[in-house]
Image (tube, rainbow, N blue to C red):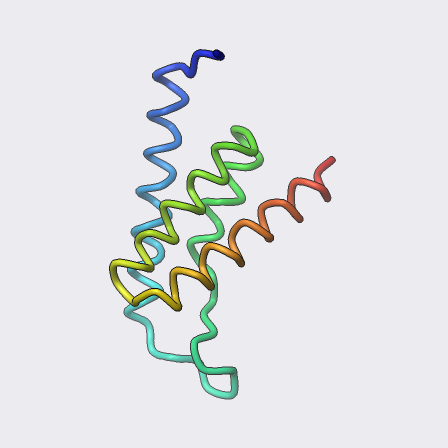
Length: 99
């Protein structure tokens, strides 16, 4: 098995914390007019993009899963599924574009 360094785990946790804070701030903003219900700005995706560019694909996927679990706890199962599917697909798309 491959060892994961403590520094990498800590960096991933810090980026995940930033993503959760941005997600909470975004949750407190009012809905934008003239858009579909439930559509948000996606501020927490900034942290995901940073994790992908500065660290690695697995770290970015961990940040996405942490964000999705936060959505489950705060907004329910439907928000969890939307966050998880959208986050994983966008990280994979960003990774493919980077490569």
